[in-house]
Image (cartoon, rainbow, N blue to C red):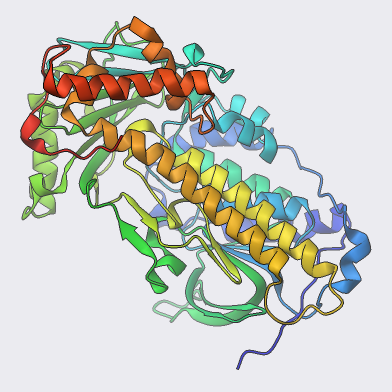
Length: 515
């Protein structure tokens, strides 16, 4: 039986908080020598930025109710994972004065894919207090997306500023090692405790608390086993990404049956971007058999290059054969071979498979799933970081509301109340709604007819303006935007039967889209 634990909201002065977390900063941020690959790029971006990162004031707007909260739990909230979802959740909760522990198994900065952002991230950066730091970081500014067919014979550009009833016009192309470090530092400055190199290895869920087992960093002695410990909290946020700390334990994950794809990607120096591609644009190069290639400019010299194909296309190949196939496809595609003829790979090729999924539930009595821990979509529309930031901030708001409700109770032991259950249920519904909105558009992209029209865009009927709204990251479309964007889906259905443009893609590759 797990005994009811006690914790309470932070009631410390800002100087005390700053001293507490500054003392742990250097020790937790040391990166072992074996993990320093690519550190030169990180330092180029990050060292000047850290000098400008400002402390953010911790608010304590509910301090009058502190004494009503239980006092002997270790933390109010434990967040597993320090990526965009985890750091944004911790940021929101720490800003409200709750005691937050973030467990991150890696040492930052570290490489991560998902480098092309959407304009809808901008207001989230404002909310988290990092908008100015992001702006000053020197990231490549992204104003749209260029969609091209593999032979270069057709294509077009979606410009964010043309979005309907949408005032979000720019985004960024970012080295994720830099962005994720910036976001986690902001959460730390707001009062969250971050433990790097610490893996959550087990969990016990009770009606009134969560007990998390940790594998702490090994001692200096070589071959020493990880030191295990237990921490207790009122709530757990699983923001562990695709590893799915809680989602997999509870068997919640549901792989998308129609988006079973494989991705291979790496960074390249010396890619010569075609002159007709607007500065800063991501290039999405569509392949005849419904795969696609991305080119994302990260700096004047460094480009992220990736390939997404049906997993069946590389079925039975070992890692080295998959890498060879990745390089062969890049060489065979006229658009990429032309731009990469003088390019040199700057890091190892990474491979991921079956990465589109959702979960049967996004919340329970004492836990929430946020970001990639709950759901992930094929990256063609660059929704990953936005959904992670939205999920993380929403998770922080939901848990903060639940903790406030508990603080008003005469007794704090026992399960969630109907009021807190409603808060958690609303969070889960909102996460599913956001995912399904973008899932519909991603699914359509894998229909041959839809892809044909995407690579041969028309100015008629304002359909490009409607699509620009979707690709800006807008989830709440106005009636006008929804009608214009939906018209392209309808035109694609007509094109399947009565061609409205040249057929570019293999119609035998299946029908993965939903309208």
